[in-house]
Amino acid sequence: MDFPDSEVMDSDLSTIVDFNHINSTKSTATSSVKAGISSTSGVHELLECPVCTNSMYPPIHQCPNGHTLCSSCKVRVQNHCPTCRQELGNIRCLALEKVAESLELPCRYLNHGCSEIFPYYSKLKHEQLCKFRPYNCPYAGSECLIAGDIPTLITHLRDDHKVDMHDGCTFNHRYVKSKPHEVENATWMLTVFNCFGQHFCLHFEAFLLGMAPVYMAFLRFMGEDSDAKNFSYSLEVGGNGRKLIWQGVPRSIRDDHRKVRDSYDGLIIHRNMALFFSGSCRQELKLRVTGRIWREQ
Ligand SMILES: [Zn+2]
Ligand SMILES: [Zn+2]
Ligand SMILES: [Zn+2]
Ligand SMILES: [Zn+2]
Image 1 (tube, helix red, strand yellow):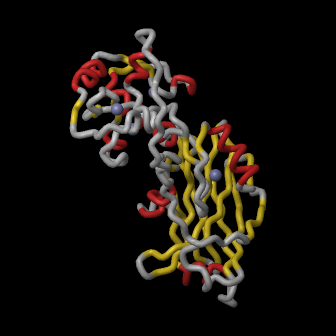
Image 2 (cartoon, protein in one colour; image 1 turned 60 degrees about the vertical axis):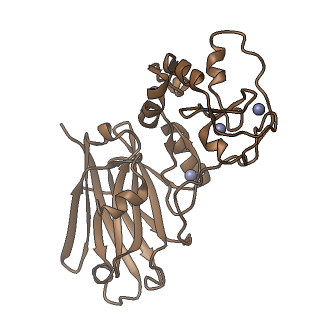
Image 3 (tube, helix red, strand yellow; image 1 turned 30 degrees about the vertical axis):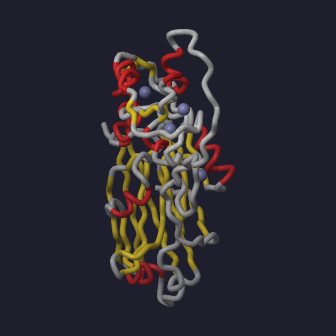
């Protein structure tokens, strides 16, 4: 089989960063007050915390004047109502909690295509798993807060991360690194493949497995886990008459990049073996990784 050949040079070595997206919490209390409730749909607005604008869940708190706020904001406002500055105390708003119980609301990803309706208190649980929720950017190696649907992420990866895009279900990549001993935990390379009308992310990286420096290659599917299972892939790397072969199932990009890595769900090449595959000099890493993606029947 004739593979298209391409070469990936490792040029951007970034230091390790925490991929966990920083939860931007609004710490300053605003004093905006919602205007009067004019319709039944306004009940939804009543359940929006005036400080953080998130939906409120029990325990919902109120000040002696009846201004409500959510429990996570309550601990941040130093016992003073953000609306009227009265001392807060510890008053629950049971009536509002009961009203919430009787509400049915559309999924917050209605605009993304989810048409389901849920009781107020189970809505949040659904939204955490809703298949219409945006995907996080699959690029590893820098902290990226972009989220969106797959077409948005494809454009983002190509334009903002300058990721290589390939059409086809076979690949033949050469990974070259001139000083393989200098980097332990800081190499990420990503290539995106477009085949079967889907997109796949091929990750290649170096990290320490315990004390042992290793290289690892694995594939992630840009879509849901249930669809990822319809595909398989194989990776091969070798030299000097030896060969390592990995066959696996791509993981959904819903699974964090680091989670996949830490479960060793991919082709792992110990550095000594990688240098052996690279040729005689052992000073330069030159790995040829070939692979194929196919659809399971
Ligand atoms: Zn709040
Ligand atoms: Zn108040
Ligand atoms: Zn939904
Ligand atoms: Zn990104």
